[in-house]
Length: 63
Image (cartoon, rainbow, N blue to C red; front, side):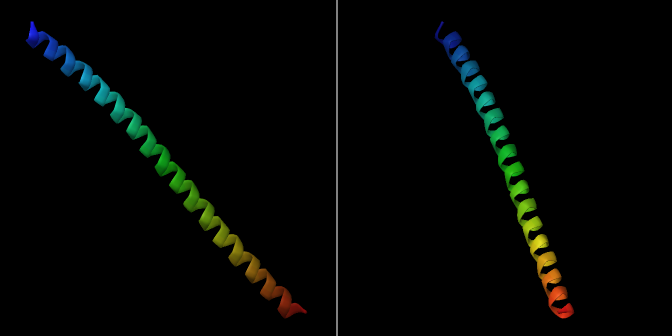
């Protein structure tokens, strides 16, 4: 009888670990996506800043 209880406990713990791992994996994927999005936004800002500076220089040369 005690052996059976141990198996039930083991199965329950295993299911909990699977759930925890899935939850963790989802969180990691979400974090990676957020980081990629942040990087894309930063790159876009730098790119727009470069365009703006180029246009400003062009405007100054024309004046």
